[in-house]
Length: 231
Image (tube, rainbow, N blue to C red):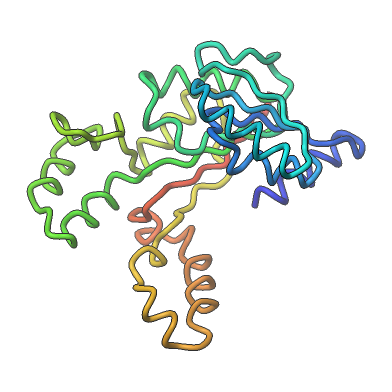
């Protein structure tokens, strides 16, 4: 899906490299491959250690990435210039998710898109229950933000489909695609795949087919939105 988005951006730009802004991009898990694919990539990341690793990975891959130490309060990049903005694993950890997403919407060019990948609250409940952590599962169910308050939970919040859609719309973006990631693939033991030839390919096909189908989508480990800036 992101490949198609970047191809469309390249067409809009008359063959010029698509401009990608990866906010909270860490050590470049997404940024380095995108730069290797011919994109002009900027990473905004608050951690100097992550940026140091990013520089090393970019150098080893033979690509150039513009790295900015900052966060959603100070992106340090011109507004309205990115063809694609990535916010993968970001909105769960920022202080104010609505403010952060508004900043990202400002950074994207008209016609461009924001890709948001977040942890799913209901998947977290199910996974903890399956693991025998019943008390934690109930606490996640009762907490509107999907946070294990009072614990060492690394996330400030988790999302469900209605809440994520509402957040995107309030940021002035339109929801073009909302799909699940990790619906069944996170539940199938590796030993099952190893013991059955072709099982991995069949699982990948099942995952793709289920990605946009509710209620399966609604309990995926992660929720992914592609949101469009129309004006």
